[in-house]
Length: 463
Image (cartoon, rainbow, N blue to C red; front, top):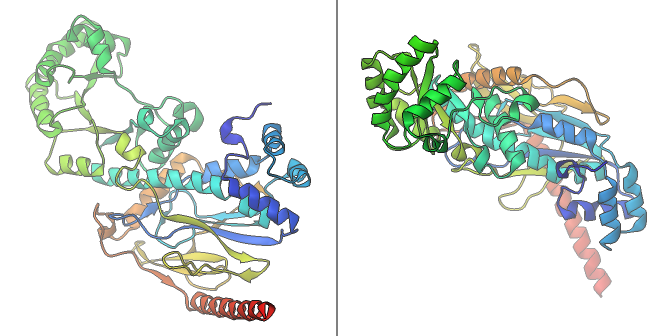
């Protein structure tokens, strides 16, 4: 059977394979612990929304080297035949602990923890980061759009400018779990159960002899759900045209026009003018939908000025997270063969050992602080990292998207009000436990002793 590219083990960085061979040849495969975390939040961001766990579980459960992968490894001439043969039965057999999708997260907090034989835990790095990073970026951006919209309808419009087919589908999922109402990406409905919505293109209007003919044809084709695009030529003239058409369609065919869509120009001013025309013409039930290079900042500005817009289509700027298109995230080895480890290089240091995030709430349910602690510490608070897979198998079916959406709503509602602003504010408190700080000092001291011993040995050998 031919594997799709997204299912192939070789969808990874080459160094994952070269390290795998080096570990194989040295017979290094003791238990390793890796954690994925974000070193720092993007400028202007106060929180992130964790997403992508469901796709990661699918990847880990189905990870295999197919015959095409093995054939390339044999033909490229880089790899040992015995190593290649060992990949025939390569599987993920480890454990995964992760924060549930939809959880609000902050800098330096592990989003997930992998405990597995070293070769498995190392090899999965690139695709693991790829899956979690992208949906977390989009979900975090989408959550800000939801905050800005203040209850107005939001539709994902981003497929055509997403960075590839997988990105388009996964951004539909990520934006929906963050609180969007639907997506224009049709395949998201059968794959994920996400409601889909759509209107028409300017070409539909242009293809007809007149705007009126185009609007009537579309409304008759979709008598219960017609949204008409009215800015192909003259938005105000088109709005005036919609009024008599709406009355005629209702009186003659009992067909209702649901909304009109504006996709260009001064959206606030045009929406106000169109609202006035529709209301004066006896069409107060026809809604106004806006689109066109929108993001949370544009939406917030339109809401603040009182623009009579009932919903927004948000595409490119959300699906690419245009102002913050990536996270400074890392998947790092924190323990190997029961030995805690850490990296100390400038700007990229991290805490050693398997860890837990303990979240503490106020009496009213609002978030108070998080404590970054060792996984075995007895500390008050709710542990965010939960068991997800054991011995390579999921422990339970994943939650429905409706449940993840509810989690996002509850998590954002529990944030201190300042953190829900669209500008950076005082960071949420994340405290490092004393035990973890002591362990870091011990690991640093051990590394320094080892470095001194290595230096002395090399100097002695050189004499």
